[in-house]
Length: 545
Image 1 (cartoon, one colour):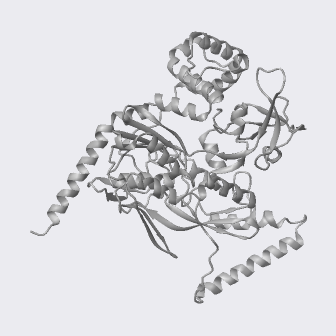
Image 2 (cartoon, rainbow, N blue to C red):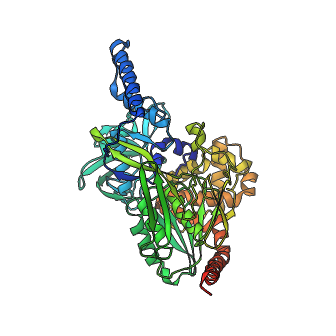
Image 3 (cartoon, rainbow, N blue to C red):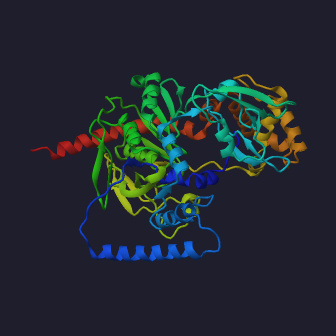
């Protein structure tokens, strides 16, 4: 699939990230004694009311109260009074307009009714607005019908989609479960539009989107976020992998932005001993809440390595922090995002919602992993610069006596910087050469087998395509980067034809960090053994003589 830069995703998803690890509560009204601050608040509210009344009465054009009170710009920056007020608090307190709030609830439920494909607006070759399909949910009605990433929607039920933005096209495609929609798409290499009749159904986008054995006894599980079905999906995955006989597990949380707190607790519960603390939280107006393992790992203590990066956030950091503090797993990769704030989501009138930070959460050792957001723009907060490991001003200790640090996210036990592209690889990436060639190749060949391999003939066609596109990468440079090119081409072609889940598996099988995690499994096993010995010796020392 065509990759959208991570920075763009983070900006576009700022509202979603703002409520990660949040819990749904109804509006709370609590009687409090009058204080001097109450009268000050009332005075300020009167000032605001006077200003708003003046604007509404005297402004040159009619004033839209939805915009002035609730409005955000296209990047989520505050334009209205409520979002602007919330942005003075922290980056994660946010206001949800009705459509955004409905989408948020749908995402956290982990399922919805539709056809199962993404839609984004783009300008076509003629400069007109069109709707492209960047992704198709594996197993969904759209996937089964044969819709592919890269298809451009031209008609919906016979009505032209030309000039319509993605939200309007999505509204045309939506409908009740069991009903059908006709979609006509333009596909590269096809002279005529490709027609589909798709029956709408319940769509479940799995959060445990990859789980398999890397080698006998060593499993790999990838969790992309935490929604209402994540614990059930993990339970099924561990059962299928025969967890009782595993010799090691690589748990990949890279790029996981978080989600529901209770699901992070339940996922952690799979791997910790019964009654071990997972996370606790408290705030100025909320009592302390402690979450412990209730079912426990049933003595299935295979060694674990957890993979994290700078986009591992919130609920994913709760899992990482709990497993690290209890020496249950080695953490490998980059420092994580660093979100230690908990939002309560208040249901407001007219189907709107307010995500308000009401507490901080702490890992079992007492670490607050929230990174600094004071005097920092939203862009700088979400798009962290390379190499920022965060301050090590909070030192705590794991169950086995190792030092761990708060502030600035979860610091890996084994730091591995992200891979960097060389000049040729960067040129290919900037030109979207692999994605564009894959669409071109499938336009000619229509499909590929599941066990597709990149042959010299495919490389020759790629070289010719680069020359025709004026991408300044020579055949000799392609040969110098042959392993990189072959891997990217294979993964992209498999993803378009057979789905994102199949691409994920190919990526995991060839990922150097996953391979390093497997190599470090004996180190993870030694960590478990050391912690058991350390705790036993402390109990011995503290026993009555």
